[in-house]
Length: 242
Ligand SMILES: [Zn+2]
Image 1 (tube, rainbow, N blue to C red):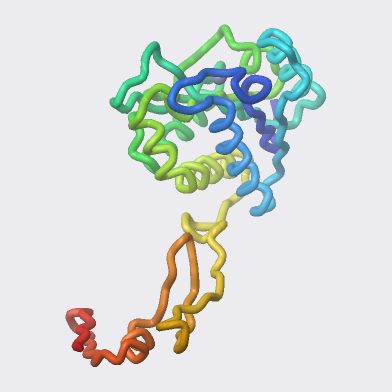
Image 2: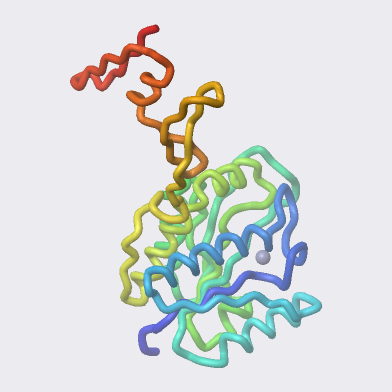
């Protein structure tokens, strides 16, 4: 097998509420993750495709459809996005794992990337010989289980570190097919928006909003509020006096 030339992403199952359900819906989260990782790849010129099964009516059709989709060509590396479930809802973290048939090295790298980026428990790379998308596809494949839909801690970590997880996985996958992702965590999807902070609907100072936070210069804010400002460069402490 020659080296894969593109990453072929797909979302597991065949629509919302067709996978595991717990605190969250598996398919909704898998879609969110896979879409974002795909977008990071594309915006870094890493060849990638994205697929979601919207036609199947049951899990058997879904697996056959996914296999048929990927077997149209033989130049890719398949990445299937899923979340795991345990019997009942728990507060405890359970963790991420990556399933593989013959791709142990990259599977291990992906699960390590997820766990280093998020603090999720590392359940490791696990060999599976019973999964159609891993076994019946010509192209090499891994199946990512991002976390457990039944673990409050997993959901918390996935939410909190969503972007870092996606960036970390994209980096590993890009490297696997010979590309480099240059963007750092925090630089993407966080545009700067110009804004204003106003005092008593009269005076105002310029502000910017980034990542849901409004930033102003302390000096301008002090002037606006008529406060005396003393800044100590050594201690990095800004003192304000009324
Ligand atoms: Zn699944």
